[in-house]
Image 1: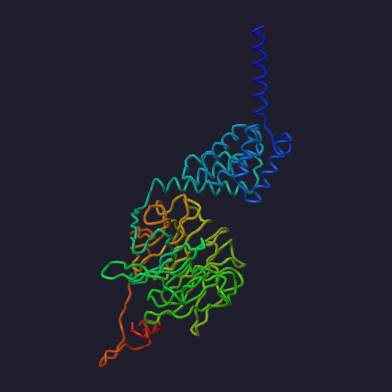
Image 2: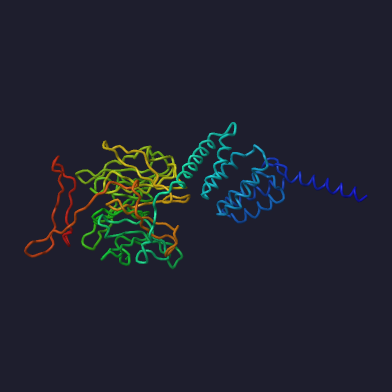
Length: 478
């Protein structure tokens, strides 16, 4: 009798175990599981993610082999930044040894490991994915790109570039977020964006400015009106002489689109009221992140306007002798991809462009790149700035000094004063532009010593053409 009871117990255990490991889809799962799965979908649509997770956890506990529920739960874990739980759920689903949704599971595992910087671990999943028969084209394209990324990253990890970031200190950085630094050619003026929390618990972005005196950056001051307003100001560039500020303003009266590009001119210590650049640079689309060339002729910016190659592209508009910007030209498919390509910075050498890209092959979600013009004016092939400048995370913008030696950027990777701090580092040799120098001085009356306004031209003696035409500051003659 005891043996019979034991045999019956074992048979029931085996039946229950076999039932629990049976593979289900959203079409043939038990009705209760299907209903809960549908309810979880509704919760996700209402952004009630925690409730959806709780519901799905109960579903996979009672019906472990429900593949769609496992995948949805893993996606939610990733969204809620719980990669270990997502990995556990996906690897379990993969162990069910079914072709159903296998490409989805393999791609998710490859993407998860890549995002965690586990490139070596991701590669076998992606290789298996690309080896599946009758693989859907979309999965093939994504899988091939991820595999290229992981192989590139593995090589980059094995060949790191010199990188020693230095925090710019308490004069610049605070417990708030500081980012998007821009410096003048003489590296004596720094303008950046600071994100402040208001008493209403909302956030506001303003510009701050700091001067370097005796080699030390002075405490940054709010640029105040007319530059800063009650709205957000950001995504800016300063001309090498420090006299023109180009920036992005959104939802302003008289704007052409959601965000437009504006500029302001400095006279002495006073900035003029911002002026909308207008068409054809600004449209009813989104225009942002301006960068002006050293000669003031070319304005680089990003836009999601039609006729681009991807979601966000980099464009350039040229200033005519009559002071009008030309119809913007797309920088082409060598630089712009089907994804976001943005944060352009044209170095004063007027040949080297730094930018960020989600579409170029790199280390993470968004990497920093550089590209140079050849003698004919055509852009070459973009080069990744390397690890550990780039990581598995997001690297967004870079500003490089006129001599090409120093780079400025913002990051939360290294601790510091707050969430996001501004750092500088010596740029490694292969990532440097052509070094340039600058000339600065003052125009004044030789007898009274009073500052004067004057027009100055820099002329190429070989060709006789004017390279740069500028005016001295009306207030201080600089």
